[in-house]
Image (tube, rainbow, N blue to C red; front, side, top):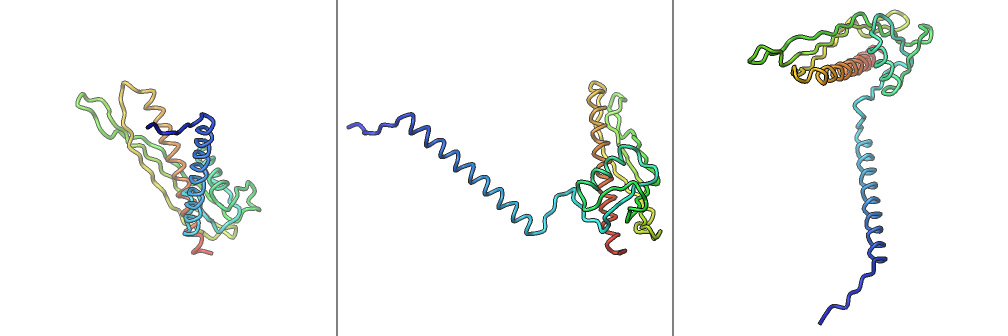
Length: 187
């Protein structure tokens, strides 16, 4: 005796559409539930910083790249804004110096360079409009190790530029975190 089942293509298509709709609805609700739980426990994205100042002036001698990273992180990852007039600023962030160096880390057995150490250091201070130091002269130092191969010089140069960009971004974020931490105790 043969089973008496007969499926049409139309019913199969409807059921597969229904299954994919239910699956996507379940995934979306699970994702929203996860975000709600993370928000309830105080989770914040890595780049967000709450600063006790509303307007920050960047002065001193930052490189254009560091200035851009600071402005971008202040604008997108904090509750403050960057101003160009000292009269509008609650806080003045002075970049005293910025050094970027590259050291040879290791050599291969044939005497060729096989790794570099990238160093990036920023010296800064922050003070309010009354001239009181919020953050005394401080420095932040970031290093990254970079493997190097003579056969892939162009890709190594590109990778070095990516590392330097990530290091400047990290420096800018650490500067703002230091301002946020010390600024809360100073206010």
